[in-house]
Image (tube, rainbow, N blue to C red; front, side, top):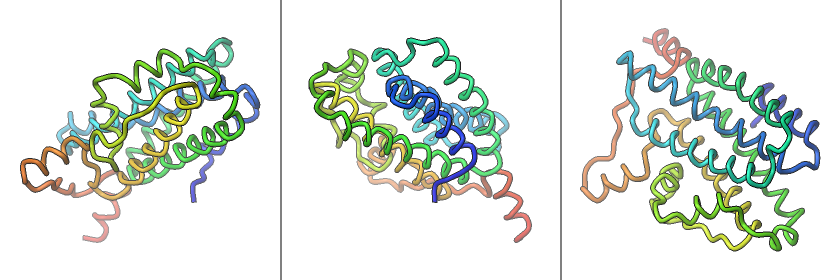
Length: 242
């Protein structure tokens, strides 16, 4: 079941403050949505620097996830979601503290942090899905923002493929004709983030889609060696059972 005090608190604030101001709410949501990936990468770089364990594929996929959320944010800015300074302040204020909470959670237990992020992405999917159902006709009459066209219709979609760990590269190519299509793709992106976060909860299970493809093409073993432990909680548990 996806629920926790930090997540419920953020959702309550977003719903209470923004209500029907959808683009401002989405701007705040996307500002916050990037934070876990920044936190994961920060901790992974620290572990790598100290020589504890290295996960190049994890860093690569999490960067691609942050890149995707960054473009969601650019789209919301183009739609006017950041037009009021108070909206920008509130979103960045929450993101600042959320970063340190996520870093602490990831250091304690990566599995717990990934589960929490899965819940956040699931909420984002539901939010966009509800918005699409309520405003379908209106959105179909509006043009797509330039930021969306540049991202989704770009010739180089390497990073777009990279965050979708459950898909093979090139298997998903967006169609953008209007603003409705943009939000359909954003919603579907959140579903892919959710799947990737679920994959991460299995010990050492995440692979870069391109790395997997290269392994298969080279007919080599696509296996990542297991670490002795991941996170403080996992290490303590394993030390007690030895």
